[in-house]
Image 1 (cartoon, rainbow, N blue to C red):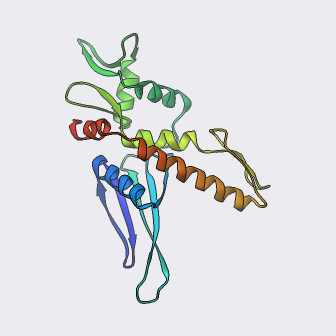
Image 2: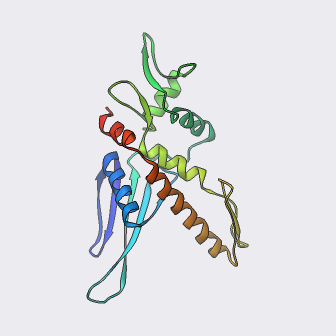
Image 3: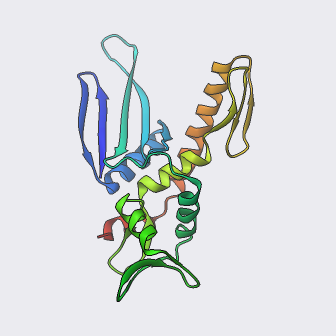
Length: 203
């Protein structure tokens, strides 16, 4: 589950949202051309403006979603495990004395398997197939495109290798922010029907 905050003319409205609802919000934002950006804590922000018909001014609006259990800043070892699971052949296997996430040629230790489940980084469907949660996928995306250097002098670099040279640090930050919004939109566009179905069938 996620915490959802909607900013509108009357202030903020807060509630909870399921993975399916978050996916719907992101797809709708993509279709409408709204700005959106994944966060390293496993959430996302969606921003747009609407025209006030009375004042004819552009009024900012936003929706933010964050997992109820914040993922924090994922370490490299955890990100490596999640990338392996994301390949798509992981299964949740019950042995007589332990539960593990298993692949064809290896398995994740029981304690690590339990940690991934407890932190809600992975989910298991009715057939025992393991997938990354939406929060995990958003967090990995944000980690892959975090600022990796520079900034103050107008030069900045993204962890993916994208570099910026701008007149000011603020201008460089703006370009990096646009880059992160672009890759978030690309990520949302790449989510296929099978993943959406997996969300619906997860226990």
